[in-house]
Structures are given as C-alpha cells and as structure tokens.
Length: 195
Image (cartoon, rainbow, N blue to C red; front, side, top):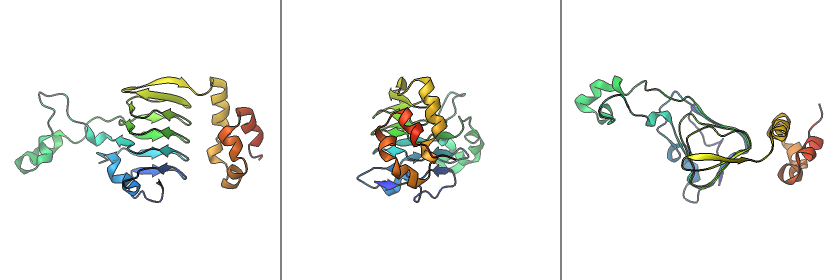
C-alpha cells in the first residue's frame, strides 16, 4: 500500500492527501499501470482520503477511436505512411476530466471510464465498470455500474457535504477519528471545528 500523492509526476493527474493504492505487485507503478491511454489534455483528479483496492484502473479519453467511418482501427498509430494521417485520430470527442471526490472507496478491480464524476463518500463495488456519474455518498456496482442506493438520505448528505471533514486540520481529524469512522451525522456536527 502506498500514498499516491508523492508518487504522481504527470501534470494531468492530481491526487489529494492520504489517498492510497493497495497492490501486492507494485503499487508504486500506479501512474503507468492504472491510468491508461492518458495522452491529454483531460485530467484525472482524485480527492483526499480515497481508498483504491488492487487493480483499480482509470481509462482516459486517449482510448477513444473514430466511430464515424467503416473502420474503428487507429491506422496512424502504426506509423509508416499511415502516420501521415494522424489528424484522423487527433481531437476525437472526449467526455472531459475524470473527477473523483473525497473519501471514495474503490473495490478490487474497478474500471472507471473517461469523463466520469464520482461524488464524495461514494463506494464502488469490486469488479464494477463505471460508465456514468455516481452521486455523493452513492453505492454503485455492476457492469455497467448502476446506483444501488445512497448511504444517507438527501438531508444528511447535504449536512455531510457542508461538514467536509476531509478538509479539517489533521490534528482535529486525529482527535475525532472515532466519530469520523463510526459516529452519526449529528456526532460529526458536534465534532466539527469551530471558527
């Protein structure tokens, strides 16, 4: 298991503090083995305190192929005289940045497709293929992933988002760790730092 923020070198990837990736093979290779077809300009943004299990992969917009002609084969990337037609594969439509909120838990082997937005506090079940946005505190699973349920009702989700515990100072988080991990929304409101 490694914290990702210190390992990321690409300006197209942003990872928040305390977000980790767990992989028994080589968790330090996350940027090259788990963020695929990342040729830009779209970014991958992952918030703070996210937990990524082994095999979580982000497919980026560079994986797109042309769909408007008889063949989807990307001839120009093969080089030679085909490379003269690189304009046929550049500038393909994309879905924009892939954005993951704070405190998101990804199960084993999750695949996230380009341009997806996953809300704060969401849980993505093992083996899921995320093709659509997941709301704050949503639990999604399957292939394609569908919203199974939300972890809280709309009122509590609004309260949790307003509290944004992931932005609290580290010392305050440490002091109230039990509440953050196992308390109620009311408990969390009582524990929130006072201005």
